[in-house]
Amino acid sequence: MTLDSIPTFTAFISSLARRQSPALLWYSAPGERIELSGRVLDNWVSKSANFLVDECELGAAQQYTLTQQVHWRSLVLLLAGLRVGARLTFEGGGEGSQVHAAFSPAEIEQSAAEYPVLVDRGPLSMRFMGQAPAGTTDYCAEVRSHSDTYSGFSLPHESDAAFKGLTYRELMQRAATRAAQLSQLTATETHSLLLETSKLSLNATVDVLGALMAGYSVLVLDPQEEWADERKNRIISDERAAAPKDLG
Image (cartoon, rainbow, N blue to C red; front, side):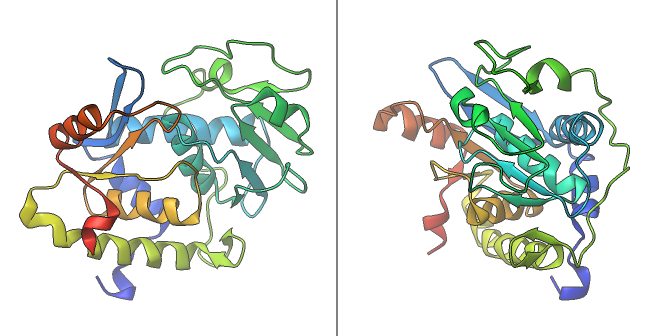
């Protein structure tokens, strides 16, 4: 892939919408498995991007603080922030941020963001199942009412910062490099990349984008679960997954 052929984030997410194969796989408690195809993942990203724009007034180049907790919903909210063109951070208490999205009421209650957003960890929760601090927005209760086609009201510009010190163009270059590395796994019939981290970060973002760009799904095992080796290895085998360390 040449520098000229590296897609913009907008082009990348549009191509994801045409994909019928799995893009995101989530495992948590025994029996809890969620599979989102590229099209369905794009629907969730679009709904969430519309939510961020319409409910939280988030726009391109504005700072967006996202929890570091790994969950299928936090990955959707990560991609939604990039869809809007926001500048993401996983650190701090929301200072200088338009939006701060997290699972913890304690974290949100102390947030300095303009719009504190509370997210429930339940796999298919329709609302936050707990006591929400005053002044917070319930993501699960609000997001489903938004269109699954993104309005495009706010879009990323390649020269804008996706993260501190890293433009959208540079982020996609890193993702393309990761995708090229993942292409080495083709002969092993790998279908998924195991996201081996307990915290979201820039590196985790590059792994996710690179896997999706290369045509793989992203396999996420809930870090809050205790994973017996037998169960973990069975899932990895069933989903034909590889870990980043397998790249050497």
